[in-house]
Length: 301
Image (cartoon, rainbow, N blue to C red; front, side, top):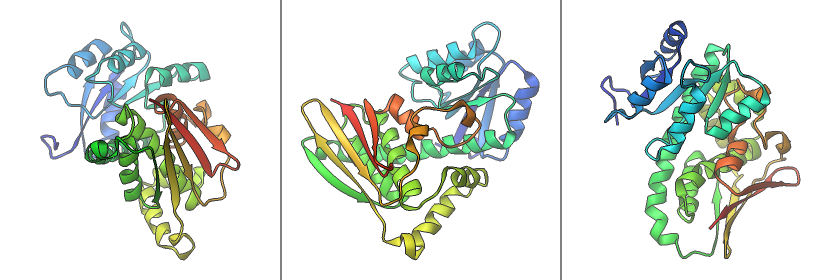
């Protein structure tokens, strides 16, 4: 729903440093967002619970006097009304254990201080694009829930961004918690298209996202002769207690093992979290086979 200034997005920034709050507001000025600020977690919690607050995401400092950012994050994720709200946590606490603690509590991204301004802008764009894609997938899921509840197996092909959202919506509709599974399916299906069939490397995607040209490049590659005929497949098999998804692309594979967990060394990158987040929050298990062009994800029924 558009905001008062015509923007679709409303962001809450929480930090006890007024100078940093001002900086973030300035950085997001050109991101078509309405930005509101809070100088402590208690005020932020009140703002989140105001009738009609309708925030799209939260940028949250971890270390603040009184109620800290980690406690506020846990409150947000424990509240059914707010649990799906993406939270970007920023902090000078940069050990792997501290970053894992933030991710386990539900942080969508974890930015270490001092952050690179362009990295924050890029991550905000990434979060908002993810929200938009989830909305599309959610609409697809609602369409297919009744139709597919009795399916025991299926195979689907996909090659484009539009295919990814459509297929993720179809498959998520077969799951007990479609919203939780849909985000993981989107990540794994996108991985098969961009890194698998189209050969976009981690570093290439990072550069393209900083340049805000990732989608443009992906669509361009889909028109090239060497990629035009490529597609990926996903099969689903319903067992007594599980749904098993098997995604296969036509690429050369990748070094998947390093992406199973979130690496603190990549905390400032706008990409590289999808597989780890899928393992944590969407599926009971995610297992890659061979060179990485086949992945099996399991949902418990």
